[in-house]
Image (cartoon, rainbow, N blue to C red; front, side, top):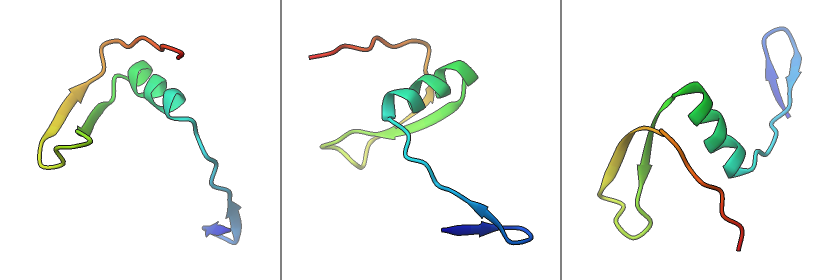
Length: 55
């Protein structure tokens, strides 16, 4: 458990990746990502849209 400030407990929560991507899209946040097989290539920009596909 992490502590913040005057002894207040800060709880870390696991977030599903799709929810995090959705939040970045809503806030128009600038993001950086690396490709799985090409870690030396970096892509940076804002998410303008995405489609959630279930298999």
